[in-house]
Image 1 (tube, rainbow, N blue to C red):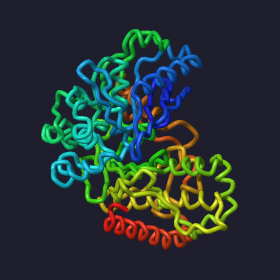
Image 2 (cartoon, rainbow, N blue to C red; image 1 turned 30 degrees about the horizontal axis):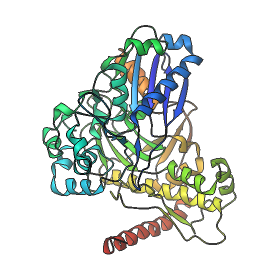
Image 3 (tube, rainbow, N blue to C red; image 1 turned 90 degrees about the vertical axis):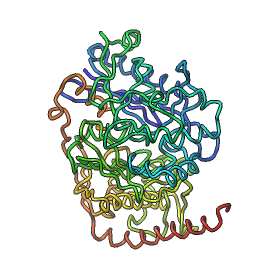
Image 4 (cartoon, helix red, strand yellow; image 1 turned 90 degrees about the horizontal axis):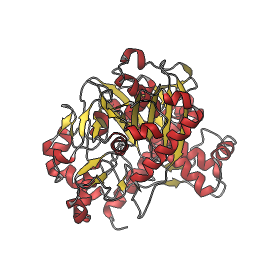
Amino acid sequence: MYLGLDLGTSAVKALLADESGAAVGSQSVPLQVIRRQAGWSEQDPQSWWDATNRAVRSLGAKYPEQMRQVTAIGLAGQMHGLTALDANDAVLRPAILWNDTRSAPQATHLDTVHAAFRQIGGNAVMPGFTAPKAVWMAENEPELFQRLATVLLPKDYLRFQMTGEKVSDMSDAAGTLWLDVAERDWSDELLSICGLDRRSMPRLIEGSEVSGRLRAEIAHSWGMDGRPVVAGGGGDNAAAAVGLGIVTPGDSFLSLGTSGVVFTVTDHFAPATDRGAHAFCHALPGSWHQMGVILAASDCVSWLCEITGLTIDTLMEQMAQTDPAATDLMFHPYLSGERTPHNDADARGGFFGLARHHGPGDMARAVLQGVGFAIADATDVLKEAGARPERLMATGGGSNNQTWLSYIASLTGISIDLPADGDFGAAFGAARLAMLADGADSADVCRKPDIKLTIEPDRELAKKLNPARDDWQQIYQLLSAQKNRHPNG
């Protein structure tokens, strides 16, 4: 048996898979985000570990015999988070998360002054990445920074608690902007720019390699016989790709989770930094990927639920009573800033065209369309960079909404495949990486799921949506120009 652990932003998920690779069961425990100031997004690393223990023990209570037989564990998790430890391995401060924008000035400085980040790190410097967070800490919390001994990514903090080993995998490490992505090794030059060196970094391995063994006392408390090996694992999107069988060059997926992602596999390091595309290592050896990212996808729907006091089901019911092709109301989904293509931490969301007759259903439609417009922008960037996805496999909670997928298929002109019922997220990918670390063959493990439905582009819908998308893009440009003329409002 194999255990996959996914440390997300909103929850920790534990999933059991059997020797055939089939999911047996899963358990999630929610997490809370701390927002002490506007633009800040933090979590207490101890809350990750507490939630992990609760998730695994709850899963073990349902499947005690299967949990006893676990021989390998895989890890996946939210990328980019700065988890700072002192020389005694104590946490120095709350972890600064991927969607925290406080380090925008530091990111701009690094990107403008140090071309090596784009050349070696393969990405434009954005506040979401780890490197500018460390510079922010050095400038704003110098006493804490002087005590900094180790930087770990979120899932690797879990690994440290589980094994005592400070290790990261290539896919997650690439998101720090301290990795030489082509060489799959830490870059001394990039670390030095941020006042760090290799001594502060975890050891690097591939996602399918063994990073260590579970501590005996933890294995016992989790109801496991022996001490399972722990795989290198992967960043959440790379792990999800493994779970979906997206491992061959040209394979692509669309994720509609908290953030929105278009992901395509490459067989070489292929940076495309000018418009915010990411070039990272994949979780498997000798493999890379390009990625376009928007920071708020289903998070926009969650936000709308919060401000209206309605459930998602109610919002979708009200939306179904409106014209799905209407575009009189538009929405910018930049609730947490934006990455691809704008690289604009100060971008903000908004409704445009709001009138007295508009209700929650109209607003829900505008939100789904606005996220669809943003996904189309990110997809266009990948196309321009040479990655031209022929099909997208859909994953994430938002992929259950076929209207949403229809918007995206029509706007991008790309067919979207919906997997047959099953759990193919990052936790499942982590379990697959555990299987590989336990000696299984990737050709046997990394299979694509059966497809239950394909959403084809709707040309008539595209004819109605594309003019609105042009206006939607122009609104952003006008607001951005105004912001630059009047930076203080």
